[in-house]
Every structure is written in structure tokens, then in C-alpha cells.
Length: 225
Ligand SMILES: Nc1nc2c(ncn2[C@@H]2O[C@H](COP(=O)(O)OP(=O)(O)O)[C@@H](O)[C@H]2O)c(=O)[nH]1
Ligand SMILES: [Mg+2]
Image (cartoon, rainbow, N blue to C red):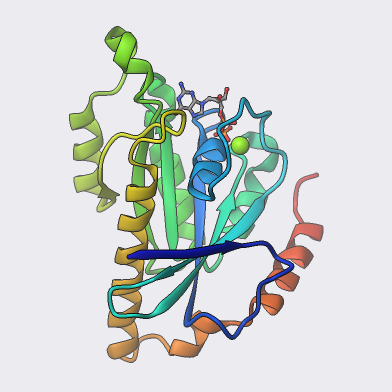
């Protein structure tokens, strides 16, 4: 997987990519979703305020088979007030980054809730990657750990989630690698579906403008304000 560029909504066009993949970052509040998305999208780590709405940005890759992939990465808010916006935005998501905080056991136990939400609302062939975040906190204070790595591995096995390693948005550990692992799995799965004629290739090449317009409208119709 080779990274080929980043763009804003102003300079995107629908002719310079082969497949558009919608990737959502979900999980409890304060687990680090916004920082993870920003890291991946090349922005600096910040002490952010809780996310109020859903935001997205694009990043381009070229696959091993030379397909041009455009990722539309969505950051979501995990708080109750905005949960139904998250549900609506999960539609057509082909990849999900499922985040918990290794020093917060509630954020791990709530993953069952998030997995159900994703499976009910996202694409039926969605790939979910488990991302334990804030592993940097354990460097100085290993006693802060509330969830063992083995628990993540077991959950991933039972729930058929992808899992690479524990991550840190703060120290930029395993963020890029995990996203790339997810993306290559998403792409491989989608290529298999196209080959088996279970998915027309055109649905992965919706014009971006149309996509954005639909999301904007959905945002306006959001069920909770
Ligand atoms: N130590 C540490 N703190 C982090 C990390 N990622 C996020 N945080 C902090 O956790 C808090 C919540 O982060 P944020 O990205 O806003 O979480 P979100 O609510 O899931 O979007 C902020 O104070 C961040 O500075 C990380 O990898 N390590
Ligand atoms: Mg946030």
C-alpha cells in the first residue's frame, strides 16, 4: 500500500481514483478518535475539545495491484447526544476503526455496543479494525493499564475483527500501519466481491460530489439536535 496524497474538498475530482472507500472512526467519547483521525490525516496532535459533529477528509493510496484508492475518513462523536448522527453516517461505510482506551475499561466493555451498531448500520461487508489507543501512557505507568492485550486479541478473534497492535495517537505508534492494514483488507474483500459479481464495481466509484451532497443533506435531517 503506497500513500499518494491528501486533499481538501476543494481540489478533489472524481476522475483520479478507481475506488472510494468510506472509513469511520467510532468508539466511546475521549478514547482519542479525533486525534487518531488527525494523525492519520497528517495533522498535529492536539488537546482537542469533544467532537460535536461528524467531519471527514480524503487521503489517497495506490494498492499493490496499482488501483488508485481514495479514502474518505470520517471522525465521529461518541457521546449520547450525537449517537444517531453516527448511526446515519455509518451507511455505506466499508471500513471501521473501533477505538478504546487501554487505561479505561468501560471504553473496552462498551465495544460490544459499538460492534452491534456498526454491524446494524454499516455495509454488510464492512471490515472492522480494533484499535486500542493511548499505549504511550503505559510507558511510564504500566499500572494504569486496565485492559490486557490478550483481551483485545480474544475479542478480535470472537468478533472477527482485524487487529494489528496497540496504538498511540500521541506518539504516533501504529496508527498509519493499522489504517493501512484495514484498507488493504477492505480493498481485497471488495475486489473479491466484484469478482464474484456480488457487487458492481460502479458502486465503489460513486461520484464524490454526489456523495458529499447526500451526506450534507443527511446532516441536515439528523435525528438529534
Ligand atoms: N496520552 C494520550 N492521550 C491521548 C491520546 N489520544 C488522545 N488523547 C487525549 O485524550 C483526550 C480525548 O481525545 P480526543 O481525540 O478528543 O477523543 P475523542 O472524543 O474520542 O475524539 C484528549 O485530551 C487527548 O489529548 C494518546 O494516544 N495518548
Ligand atoms: Mg472527537
